Image (cartoon, rainbow, N blue to C red; front, side, top):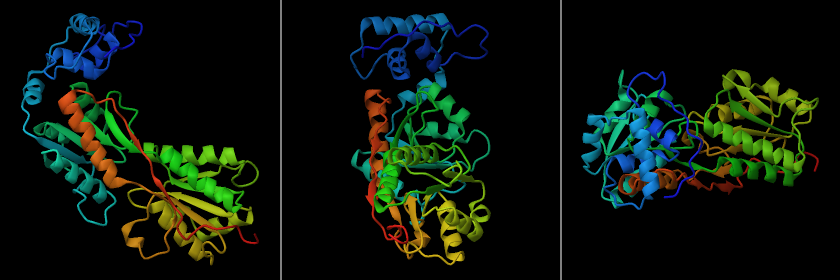
Length: 358
């Protein structure tokens, strides 16, 4: 496991509390996985360069690192239990919930690999995340996560995998859908139909899934030479409350400006898509005859009876299974750095077509 060592930076000065593995990793210029392997005695038997091992030990000595006894006891107690933590008040087991297909993939893959599951939610007060240490390792599901609490688990070397991209937490393994390319493909299809002014409606937050969708949208918009509203107005509309921010009057105004296609992101609630559908209908318009609509994801289950939206399918069951494979590799091989992106299949649907008059 050869690794490039960056310039050494002493991080112990002025620090309060017990040094963590993540700090040892930064000082040694290696991954946290390598630190865990070296300080844990490399029971997995993974090949490590002698120089790498010595750098880790030297960094640990320099920082005064002492393993957390409780964490070490838990790490040694393998009982074939995988945790699944949902950042929701109740565990989303209803078939119509958007998380349900993830859980199907998780359950099937865990059973195939001989693991049982322990389910956790974010409803317990104080220290909720600490309970996941009852399991050998844990999968995490959530659009918004308590970063500090999750970082403590990762810094302690606890095996954790997030379902969905989480670059902001260094050392956290994740698997995610390729929302960037999938969103770009939707815009390319709209361009092929002849649309020249397109607007994206998204919720006003910074969840990575939303950021990735917007990035793909903007990239394809630029590549195709498309535009949003005239006068240099933003082609991406962020709304805190889609139901009140996206109105029939808003849709009519955008159409009068020449916008012929509206795109919405999928979220847990489907709020942006619901608001857009309601506003278009309230404006007396229909898709795709009067205006084209596209959804970056899949519609909520309660809207399954509506015309199938143009967009893409999120491979939720496959992502759940991939997360289990990543977590079990982390448990058995000490390799959490794999962060696979799973492709999303384009869905032609019935809500997009050529602009009126073409």
